[in-house]
Length: 245
Image 1 (spheres, rainbow, N blue to C red):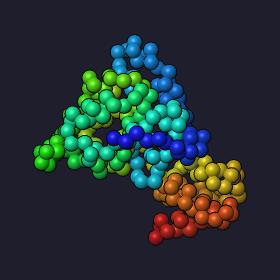
Image 2: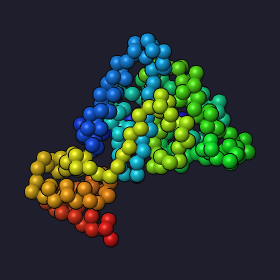
Image 3: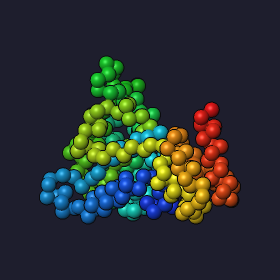
Image 4: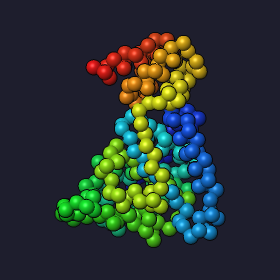
């Protein structure tokens, strides 16, 4: 597991996502950060689990960076293909500092953990054995209580590949679904890249975004191509044409 010295500039102020969801997330993080006595009183480990779900380019990694900057947490990045035994999962958890976040991105691609309803055998290639129960113990077992103020994040492009046990309420908590670019996300991107709050083309672009499935990453790429607000916005119409073709 790698401890990342994150120097990412993304903040909630510049994060392009639905404004209502952003507000909900900020309030939730603030409540969590000040909740030490509350968690102790109700007898729960002071931790949070989050599942980020959505197509590539919709903002999962940028949200992770914004969350870390908002809370000033250490980030631990783990690739489950480097973990051979359940005992290593326990060691991973014990090695984390307080006020930290464990991120497992593309969890559906990094392991061959079988859904519990599957008739296939557990992942056991030679001396490698990593089980779903081991992963559940990492996020919700007795060992998860060792350490305070931690957030565990799974990110995936395919929610349907998750075993339902991983998504049980009280285990990973909030599921944050990322969709294609919304109007509020577009407005934030336009301000970030072009310093525009208003433009005569905004209304046309907003109608376009309601019809075409385009990711925030694709919108940002178009806005960065030329240093001309009108030309950049016109490029979004060309992008929509390529999407439709």
